[in-house]
Amino acid sequence: MENNVNTEHILWQSPDHQTEVWMQQISGKTPEEKKEQSRAGYRLLAEMVKTRYGYDFWKETDPIVRTETGKPYLRLHPELFFNISHSGDWIACALGDAPVGLDIQYHREIKVEQTARKICNPEEWKLFQQADTERGKKDVLFQIWTKKESYLKFTGEGIRRELCEISYEECSFYQLTMPDEYSGMICVGK
Image (cartoon, rainbow, N blue to C red; front, side, top):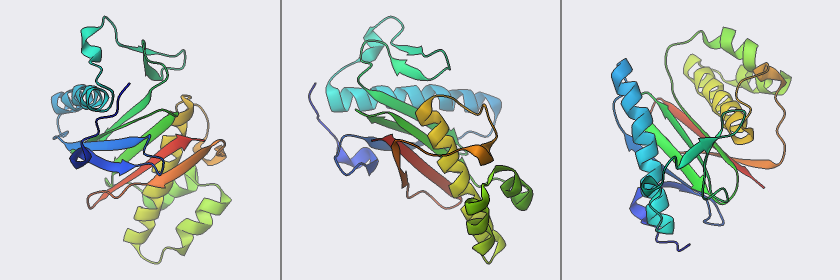
């Protein structure tokens, strides 16, 4: 497959240029808008695949299927890996030739310390405690959250265990530069 990358769409690109993240702003406040965000995520994926590889998967019957644990993949191109995330008013899609997990999160109102106690392992809790403002603590918490979610999406297992028990294997993490009040992380297989 050829690689015709249009760099104006790229939010992030791996050091080897084989994995990319694209983003698009689309409102997600109402239940109908959230459904549209999900559909828009797959349209963004289709645009990425067509731009990078010259392949239009919408011409297929059932182009996207799922593993037993629910992780989606391209039926006729299992050598390509993707992941889609949406939160607030943004959708993001990662595509590459290595397994990927992607999570973006809008910094919504939550019980910051209570949530941190529930999801952080001892090392993460220490990092959380070092933040000296409430905003700083919230930023650190969402960085930890997006790291965990991106890893679970990378493995395809979803949230099936306590988040504080997650250990990371066979991957690298990259923090995404996001709009204000958002955090994003991509997990890429080694």
